[in-house]
Length: 353
Image 1: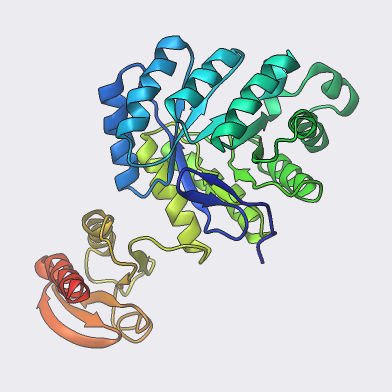
Image 2: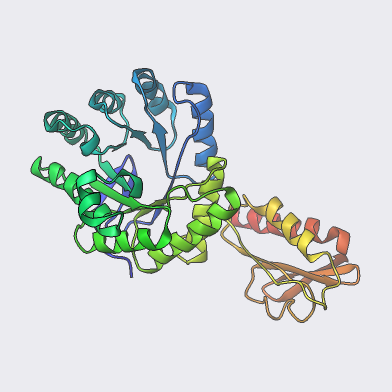
C-alpha cells in the first residue's frame, strides 16, 4: 500500500494524495534554443512524460521560459540554482513547479521572495538533495549517509515551513541503491510531503536501466513515491519509456503493451530472439494496454500464454497467431510478425469503434 502524502498540483498533474505516480524527465537541449527544446518536450510528451524539467542556468534561459510555457503541452519545471532572480523570472513566465534548494541561495530574505511569488501562483517547489550536495557540517557529523541526506532535506524544509509554505516535493537521491532506499525510508517517516524518486547518475541506457529498475522497484514496492525520473546517459525519451516499464512491471500503472516471451532452449525451432525483438520494436508505441506474447514452441505456446491478449508461437518454419489462447491464424515464420501486427491493429480499430 502506498504511503499517504499531501497533494500538490504541477499544472494539471496531481502529485501525492493517492494520485497515480507520474513520470518525469528533463530536456538535454540548450534551454535558450526554444525550437529545439520544444521539439524535445513534444517527443517526451508523446512518449508518455507527464512533467518536463528544463535547466535554467542564466537570464537568457529564464526568458526562454515565456515561450516554452506558452507552447508546451505538458507542465514545465524550472531547475534553478544559486540565483533567486532566475526563479522569480521563471515564476513570472508561468512555470508549473520549481526545483530549488534554499540552501544554495543562502540569503533567507531572497528565499522568502521566491516563496511569496510561488505562493501567489500556487506553484510547488521541489527540494532536491543528492548524496554529493550535503553540507560540510552535516558531513562532519554524520558522514555521507542516509541520515545526512535526510537532515539536509529537513533543514531546507524548515526554511519553507517557517515561511508557511507547504507545497513541497522532496527528493533524496544517490547513485548507491541502498543509500537511496534508506534515505527515502527515513524521510517518509518524518514528513508528509510527496516524494520524487530517482537513482541519480544511474548510468548508460543499458546499465542505468537495470540500476534504476532495481532501485526504484525497491522503493515503489515499499509503497514510497509519488513521481519518478529515471536518470540515464541517453535520449531523455528513453528515460520515459523505462519509467513506464518499471511502473507497468510492478502493476502500478499501464501504458501501451506488456511484452512477454520465453527464454530460448533446445526445443526452439524459430528465430525467437529476432522475432521477439522485432515485435517489441514495431509495437512499442502501440496505444492499447494489452499483453503480447512471443513464445518459442508448442510447450510454451497458446496454453502457457493463454492469458495474453495476442501472441505468436512457431516451429520448423511455420507459426501460429493466437488470441487469449485461441488460434486464429497459421502463417509461414517469415510472416509471423506482420500477422501479429495486423491482429493488433484489428484490436485497435475495434477499440476505436
